[in-house]
Amino acid sequence: MPRAAKSRPPTASEQLEALLGEPWPFRGRPPKHDLAAWTVTDDWPEHVPVTEAEVEVLERWFGDLFDALFGPCR
Image 1: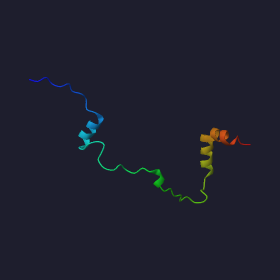
Image 2 (image 1 turned 90 degrees about the vertical axis):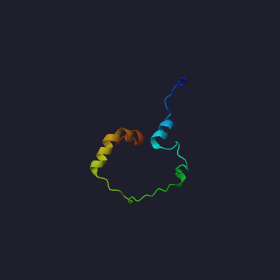
Image 3 (image 1 turned 135 degrees about the vertical axis):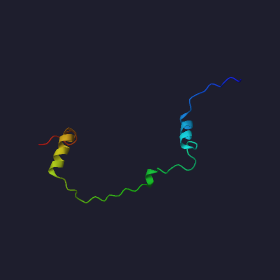
Image 4 (image 1 turned 180 degrees about the horizontal axis):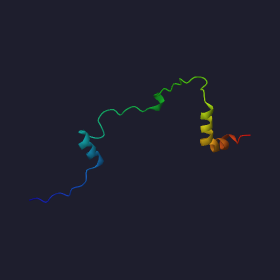
């Protein structure tokens, strides 16, 4: 009886191939992620209404940052 070869754990690619049923990485062209081709549109109104409660929340959470950026309130 021949001596059994040392077994090694399967690589990540081999595990993916076993799970997915096809080799990894997949065949074919990769998806396009060219940011230069993206289009950004702005459909917000000219003036966005903000309530006093929203302003207070922002001032409480970011008051120290606002003071550092713009100076303290007078």
